[in-house]
Length: 486
Image (cartoon, rainbow, N blue to C red; front, side, top):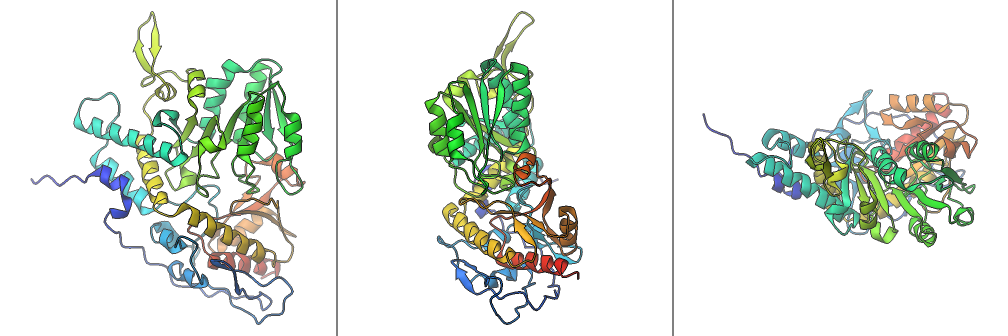
């Protein structure tokens, strides 16, 4: 029996663009979509993305494009600066070429999770097919190979975030676990009665609840930082709330419900004047903008892989060297120790101190592949494209009668949370799903932010680098049919 050749997995992961091309899944045939006669035309005005005519402007009826995914680029007259087009990303993502309810899939739920490129899918398959082993404590070849992959993933995350060293990175299941880890490993040993944790109202529940639990245990206080009517963090109120009692400021680099991008670096610099530490939730930011944790001034930075085109169940926590020295064991077990006896246990240094048990090795492999895939594009060009697409989508959504977008911060990622007069958000999402359009509805794990606008729930369309203006047009056309009672 001939032994098959084993692929060089490290080459596969570190240079995904060089992996054998996979035949794209054929795109489904276009589905004719009736369009109301009052849908305005959309001449090209925004660089890289055509801008719709403002509501009320006379225009000849224009049918909304319903082409298959690979044809959607016809709506884009120019590429973004740096040469990026969404087609470059779409060709790598198999699931974008399936149908849902007889329609081509329009995936606008990227804020919840992103779809995975073939490079990630192939990396996971190659790992389990050729290199599956536990790590760090095996002397055989495959254990060494798996360990090299795992640590290559740590290095890739450090480079991706602008960290000084891979030792600044600990692997976690995701943003939620990373925040809880900081609360339990750092916060429990630092916070004293009367200390304060400043938490903006726009935060995800995962950046509120752990601090409430910790405050109750330590008799500290969680202090909410209010928002402006536009959905921005009230910087004057923030500055006024900082004091000698402030031990920690937590803030999302981008809001999952409003899309708001706060001035994190300025907020961190101000917090540090009071000797407060700063934790940045990067879950929504990492897929949309380059990140440099040292320029941000983050003491801690956390993100989830599945928001970054990687598998679920893997994420990373960045810590400054100073914070690494302050971390205490949270979970005990294998991998986080140096020696164990019934008389005395000594612990491994951070980051291994924080990685008890067998890690999500294949998740790290997938995260490594996802980072390599994303870094194959010009990140500044991707950000410019998404900003142009957001401008286009904002203008297009304004033509839907009774639709109101929530939040209008000057700096936002491509997230549009909205309500539609006469329809609850769940029914809006259900209607769109019939047309193959995936959006999210509910409180988005950000109830205080929605309550700021007097809402309990809303619908949300969230975009990624592989979304197109044609998909925006399909979203708008479907919403207009809903309002027309079609």
